[in-house]
Structure formats: C-alpha cells, structure tokens
Amino acid sequence: MKKIVLASVALVVLVAVWIALFVTFRSTEQVLFPGGSYQVYPVTDSTVGGFSTVELSQSDSVISARVNIRSGMAYPYAGMGVNLLSVNNRPASGFFDFSDYDSLVIDAETNRMRKIGVKILNDDPVYSQKNDYRSYRPMVSQAQVRKNGVAVSMLDFKVPEWWLAMQGLEKDDGLRYMNRGMLFEITNGEGTMLGIPDEITVRSIKLWGENRTFKALMYVALVLIFAVYGGAIALAVRGSERFVKSRKKKLEDLKARMATAAKLLKESDRSVAEIAIAVGAESPSSFERDFARIYGVKPLDYKKGK
Image (spheres, rainbow, N blue to C red):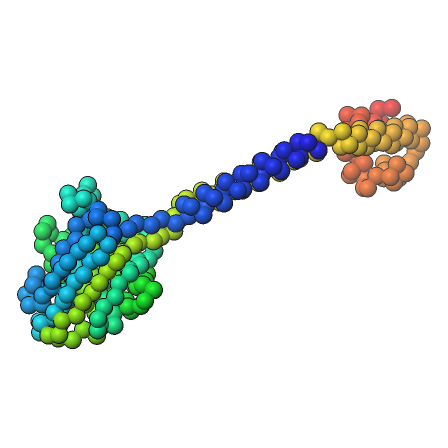
C-alpha cells in the first residue's frame, strides 16, 4: 500500500510539472515591436516609380506613419517597415523564419482607412537579387482595423499578381519561402483617399505560433509517465502480501486438482476430456496447459507413461 501511495504522489507531481511546462512552452511568440531590436524604416512607392509620401516618427512604444497617397499607380502605397535582417541596427546573421508562426497580431489604429495592408518580403532563390527591392517575393494581405488589434493568419498571405507578371509567371507557382523573411511592412489599405493625408499608429507587432515539435514530445512524455506509473502499480500489487498469499493459494489449489487428475489418469480409463471436467478445468486445452505446468508433460503422455 505504501508503494502505491508513493507512486500516486509521484504521478501527481509529474503531471503538475507536465502541465506547467506544456502551458508555458506550447506556443512560441516573437515581438517585432516594441523592443528596439529591429530597425524601422519609412516605406513609399517611390521604389517602383510612385510619388506617395510618408512622415515617420518613432518612440520606444509607438510608431506613427503619416501617409499621403499621391500616385496614380494601380497599387500606390506608403507606410512603415521593419528590417528583419537587422538586430540592434546591425546586420542579422540570417533570414527570419515566418514558417514557425501561425498568425500575426498588430495593435494598430488609423484615422480614415478601414483596413491596413500587411506585406512580408521574402528572399526568392530564383528571382530575388541583392539590394533590389522589387525582386523580393512579396506576400501580401489586408486586415480590418479593430480596437482589440489586427489579426492576420499566415494562410491569408498571397503573392500578388503584379509581381508574378513582372517575373514572367502566368499563374501563382505556389512557392512562398516563408523561412527566408527579409522585410515586414505595414501600409495603407482599403479606405485610403488619394491626396488626403491619413495616419497609421502601431503600438505592437507580434507573431504567434504553436510549438508543434514541443507539443508532440510532451504528449509522448505524458504517455511514458502513465506507462511507468501503471508498471509501478502493477509491481506494487504483485509484491503485496495479499497478492502473494492469493497467488500461493491458487497454486496450491491447482496442484491439488492436478494431483487428482494425475491419480485419475493412472487409475481410471476416463478420457482426458472427462478428467478435465472432473477436476473443474475450464476446457480440455486449459487442463492440458495446467497439467503440463505442474508435471512437465501433457496429460495423455503422462497416462501413457504411467
């Protein structure tokens, strides 16, 4: 009984630790802003021949972009960007991996525009050229501005048709390269009025995702915990005095019944099946098994060799 109590206490402790670890590390979060780790820069369509402007101001807790869309282009834009290849205003060691995340949450507000444009620019091994902004593979989406923040699923990002056409592709090739992130941008969206200034204010940009590998390992660990617990309980029960006495009594009873069977095999002409019934065996096959366990031979061989 003492061993069972100790095993149960250990189980409770291990499950409590498992729950604490699971809740703490089941998801992963990355803060792009605030924090000051990444360089923030102004974004306008001047890189593609437009004339839109932006006045960017930044503090430790807020980025404000006053945009004025002046271009007559099909897709005029202006806003702010985060250089994912910089950490503390210095070049980063590699690309930013968006594939680790499931959604993007932005605490943002605007004056007039109802939506904001969100863009991820990835390095395309085939089409991207160093320092050529237009060659980076853009993944774009628009999100409704709400008081409780803007949420964008990573599945909502698509490659725009104009970029595919610029690369000579007739349709979406299905490639994303989300593990090769370079730049992240927030620009004007639906509701922007040409020639009338508007403002985008951002207080935080966060990425969230499920830590799938960790969760899988934790589920395996939970199964192992209960398997070990079950084994410990089984050993404790098998080693208990009551179980030992019960097993000993069953063995003595079996020996007595098989001794009766052995006597009948020697002194009578009854068949093995009849003797099995006489000694209370469940079936002839179980009788043969029990008899061989005690005497080392099958009943018929014992009868022949008597």
